[in-house]
Structure formats: structure tokens, C-alpha cells
Image (cartoon, one colour):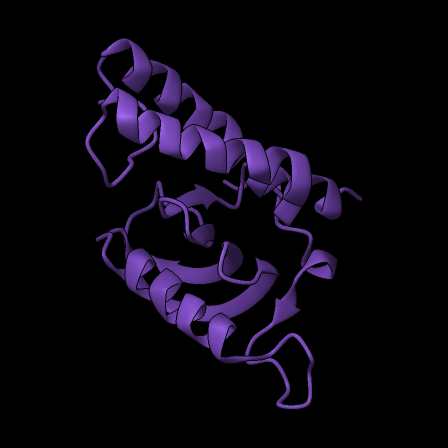
Length: 157
């Protein structure tokens, strides 16, 4: 079923070692948020493994989860983005690396921003946990611009 599988060389298996400089309270809080977000969807039975993909402290965190799918159409790998941005997930059979995840996230959120700016329906777009109005669109647009210009280049292979 899976077309591709995530590149596990681009992520770190969790839990991170206590002496790992990347380990910290921010990552723990973000991981908890990512787990809760993932578990809020009814298509995953449980989490088999967790990986840390990327973190920009207080701004954005990317995690990869190996799950036990609850339905045949659900992939076993799911990427989750949390932080000071709307949370989102991406199937791991579509994207392999944190760079591809963030690039796809920015693109999908930009589609939402454009629709919200123009007062169009966002029903078929990536779910965002705020009202689709011009004010929210502008706030999200500025975050996306920052991610595109400052964070995404850090993840390039």
C-alpha cells in the first residue's frame, strides 16, 4: 500500500537520551501536543513508535509517528506538525523527510490563507482551527512567510 516510507535517517527515535542537547521541556510539551492531536483522530488505534524530525523552539515542531492504523486506508506512518502554527498531519506515504513535510505544510496552509482572504470555502482544504477570515489569514500568512524564508532552508538536504 505505501508508495514510499519515511527516511528514518532524517529523524531521531524518541525518547531522546537525557544528555541529548535537543532534548528538553519544549520538545516534551510539543510531543504531548502532537500525541494528543494524533489521538484526536479516530483512524489510528495506537502509537507504535515516535520520532523527532525538527524543532524550532517555541515556533514549530515536526514529529513522525508509526501507528497501528484503525482502517486499511490509513498509512502506518503519520507526520504531525505542532507549535505556534495550526496543528496538522501528513501521511508518511506521501512525504519522506521533515523538509518535505514543512514544504507541503506551507503550501497547504497558503491555499487556506488565499481562500480565507477571498472569503471562499475552506471545507476541502487543510483543516485550520480558527475561523476562515481575512484577519486570521493575515496572521497565518506572516507565520508561513517566516517558516518559508527562515526555517525551511535549514531543513534542506
